[in-house]
Amino acid sequence: MNFFKGKEGEALPFDVPPMPPDGQMDLFGFIPTSSNTPEPKPQSPECSQNGLVHFKYSPLMKKSIRCKGGVLFGHPEVLLPAYMKAPEFAAARELAAEWAEHAVRRKTQKNKAVIKDLVSRFWQAVDQIFTDKGEMPLSTKGRLPPIRPQGKYHNLVDVLAAINDTYFGGMLSCRITWSNRVGGLSFHTIRKDPVTGENFHLISISRGYDAANCPLYAIAGVVYHECLHIVIPVEVRHGRRVVHGREFRQRERRYIYYEEWIKWHKEVLPRNIRALLHHREL
Image 1 (cartoon, helix red, strand yellow):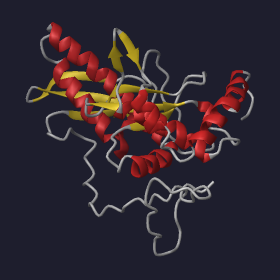
Image 2 (cartoon, rainbow, N blue to C red; image 1 turned 135 degrees about the vertical axis):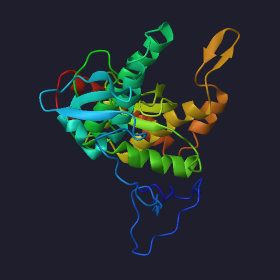
Image 3 (cartoon, one colour; image 1 turned 180 degrees about the horizontal axis):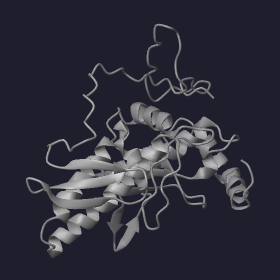
Image 4 (cartoon, one colour; image 1 turned 120 degrees about the vertical axis):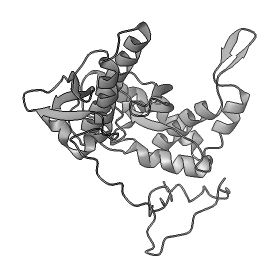
């Protein structure tokens, strides 16, 4: 179905964006704007951005980092795996430098907590870099899974951008990923950015939607549903949590293919989930 071709006799709830000069339009009519911002100068892999922490690299290391204190004017030196010398690991190296500066200080209770947080964020950032490159992340128990918006059949970034632009004026701030859970539920959580340390909204979509038999209107429907959970938080009425209240249901029905999405969600998604549980192709 074309998202910008309404049903017969039905007005669309939004304006159709103008066609670009070449006459082409992406699936949802969302035309991303190009950025003229100049690319930042590559950071040196030999030292941190502030020049206080120096890096050395070992081809024998893969899942560990080490710190030596007082090497240069009292500042630490960090030994990293050789693959972290690549430019894409610059943000992760900054976290390693911050970790090293805390690691050489007195081990107070507060400093121990900071060190633990920085180590966790560092390895999460590393895992995300591997995932963004299309490689397998390092396997470590207890670590938050990296964000994976590119599925086998569908890219969630494109769907989220179209829904955000169409229904939220492009003002919604969140990220999106395919869920690592095998079950059929999609959900919304708050996660900490490993690089900046700031909290952000993360939408996780059931892998039952990443299938050849899943139309884009169904994926867009569940993405819109989860976006509404960010805009309309859970209420507590008379001691009970109201997740899908009246306002939520009213706004949910504004989605142009609401009925088609609900039908697919109820009839096809359970079959896809059963196939996943039995390790069958979707």
